[in-house]
Structure formats: C-alpha cells, structure tokens
Length: 595
Image (cartoon, rainbow, N blue to C red; front, side, top):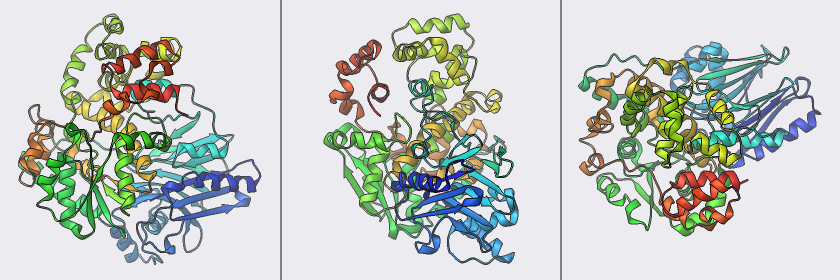
C-alpha cells in the first residue's frame, strides 16, 4: 500500500518537474512512510514517484517505482492484489522468473503477458500507473470497486496524476472548482468524478486511462462492470454461497507480512469479520474498538459477548470530548476532500497505528449490498412521490423541516434527485442562500452530474442498493476510509467488497436478499449460529461517535456569531437547540472556516 504521483510531457524544465513530483510524494508521506522512490526519463519528459507502505515483502526488494527485467516496463503502485499468488503461479508456469515476493512484480508481468486483459484478472484494491516503453504509453488503472483513489489532470497535453487531490497543489495545480461548495452542501462530500480543484478528476472504478506519449492523445475505458443477474432464488443455496465466498475473501485478505486488526464496533458486519478472521490467523489478529464516557454510544457489552469466545488481542481506546477538541483541526487537515464523515475512522486508525498495526479489516459494504439502511424502506415512498407534479414538489422548499424541503430534489431532471432526497444535506434554496447565488445555478450544477445509464432500468430495493453502493459508499465512505486510514499509514481492507463476493450478491434475487422486518436478513441467517443473539436482534446503531453533543460544546462550530451569512447563523441557532444534525453543522463550519 502506497501513495503514487507522476507528471508526463510537461513543458517545464525537467529539474523542476522532478522537484514537483518529489514534493507531491512528500505531501503524501503519511500514506507511505517506509520508503521513497522516483523514476525519470528526461528525453521523454516523464517522472513517476512513489511513497511506500510496506506490507508484503518488507525488504528493499519491494522498492518502487519497479522495473521489469528488461527495464521496458515501469510501475508505481498503490494497493494489494489478493489473488497475486495464483497469478504468480500461472506466470511461473508460463516461464516468467520473479526476483521478489511482491504483488507489484506480479502486476508487471501479468501486463507484459496479457496486456490490458490483465487488469480484469486482478482481485483486490489497487490504483497503479504502468509506463510501457515498448508502446510509448502510460496506463492509469483503478480497482473494480474504486476502493483506492486515483486522480488525474490534463493541461496543454501534460498529464499529472496522484493518489490525493492535495498533492496537485505541489505541481502548481490549485485553481478551485467553482462548484465544489454546491456539491458539498448538497451531498456532504464531493461526488465523483469531481474534486475541489478545477479539471482534476477521479478515474472511475473498474476503468483505465491510456495516454500515448508521442501523440499526446488519451482515452478512458471500462474493463469491469458489476451486473445484476439474479439467478439464485433458493435461500439455503444463497446462504451456503455467502458463507463460502465471504470466508474465502477474508482468508485471502489475511495475507500480509505484518500484524492485522479488525475495526470492531460490535455490530453485525464487524462481528462477522472478526469471527471469520480469527479462524485464519488469531495469533497475529487484534480487534480495535472505541469506547466513550457517553454510555449511549458504548457497544462494549455487545463486543464482550462475542470476544469471550474468540481468543484474539482486544484493543479498546477511550475517546473523550477532550480528545475530540485536541485533534479536531488535525482531523480536518487529514481530509483530502471536504466530507461529513470519516472522523471516527481517523480515531480508530490512530489507535491501530499506536499499537503497530498497519492493516485493518472493515465491515464496510455489507449495508449497501444487503439492505441495512433506512433508504431501502424509504425508496418506495420516494418512487410514489415521483408521481407528484413538479410544481407541487418545488413548493416543498417553503416548509421549515429539512426532511420536507429535501422533497424539492424529486423535481430535478435526473435520478440524482432521488438520492439527494434520501441523503441530501441541504435543499437547493438553502444552498443558494448560503452561497449567495441563484437557485438555477445550484439546480443546473446538480443535474449535470453524470450517472450510469443502468440506474434507469432498476427499481425498489435494487435501486436503493445502487444509490447506496455507487453514490454514498463510493463517494463518501470509501474515500473517507482511505484517506483517514492512510493519514496514519494504515491500510483498510474491505472483505465485503471482494469482487467475487459482490458478483455473488448481485446474483441473488431481490425477493430473498431484502426483507422489511429484518435488516440484512440473508447475512444474519448465514451467520446467526455464530453470532450472539444480542448482536443480530438489536436495531442498527452504526459506527458512530457522540458528535452531536461534542460539536454543540464547540464555540467555533456552534456559536452563530462565528458566521457572517444570515442563513448560516439561523441554522447554527437550530443546531444549538438540537434541531439540526451535527453533519449539517459541520458542513457549514467547513464552508466558512476551514482551509
């Protein structure tokens, strides 16, 4: 796991380009504290950099950028290929000789042998750049679920790329995207492909960008898309396949030359991960949990019920309001992009780092795949309300309650309106007031967000799952988890998002996958015998902290006098009265105060 950066075909002096790539890498040192490398070819105006977090083959043999034997291929790589041993064996049988035990070298020779077809063979979390001297081209490639980030920028045919948006400033790319505040106030994050910087875009998941160095032309192509092929209709078969495939996913993701932890909240998803992981490597496994003085947020009892039957190291960290205050600005600075999430992940990954743990497993993805959110129930109401006239929907902005004001979003000429009705932070009229712009600008901006055409063909719970998986998880949870974990040099792995497991879940019929009475019924049924009854019977709590209470104590966030905008003042007053959610208040703070 690493951080990567590069500049190709720059018109600047080559020494300056080298210095910029080095500065880009240095700005991401937190994500790759173990090693640094750079590869440069002056006559091709090419410079690639890498900051390494060593997890497989901890020796210097894993140094990056890595060259092939003939030095005609170069790679700088961020991620883990979980099935690299199988691919390595296949390549050895084909006559390839390996010098290291790394998955990095496997990527090189897989590409050398299969070309672009190799990208679809990799199972894992990855973002990498390959320089092919033979074809005089550059490939940027991102994993099938977009777990690892990769951003790019073109300017006068110069390609610049990096693992973090902040790194682009080191390459003198710092012009702000005029619309990022609209995105943030609407979504609580910046949706892909956009970023806070103008013309700096996210490479889509399951895609590669190919750039021809001589012609300076490029194109982006998808190499993998998940499909909903619901052919498993028998519940017992579905349960058996879930247990088989999830177990295999976790077994693969336990491969590491360092100790591993589980982010263990005590809920269903993290409990299942903890149980399965302990079966494969309990000697080098730890559970990592957060405790609070605020008893309503403590899940210690639920965790203890499970841990008494599992013999692994248990790391419990008490996190107090004082900890929150002392670290708040550092946490915000660790956010590569503005977001209303991820603070909790920052604290638990900080705990992991303090105990020398570089790799942790997370239960992220289960709610999106199996229907764990309230949106799976609300989607029916949303679709019924879509039958109302646009004039009626637009009149909802005159209501005072935010949940009614959000109904305005259903009048948008885009399915994005449904998502924002379900999960939006502020309605368009409020955003316009907060930013002192006209409402048409807000609406036009949101309607132009590109969505996959497949969303038009699905409905009900499958539609809710698509929104949660491709919007909420993709744009917020995965990004937040990555940069909050990597800010401490901790890699977060997500077994529920193993590509084969996701394929399996998509093959299960909606009728047995989702249930109104029991959230994530199929997952619960698969592991009911392994879990304490209290774990699967109680209501979903989520991995949350006492932020509502803590932020209301903060003068910087909760004092209306800290805000010049009239609407912002009134909203913060509501927050002080406990009538506004902390995430909405945090969005205001980020817009008006944070750098």
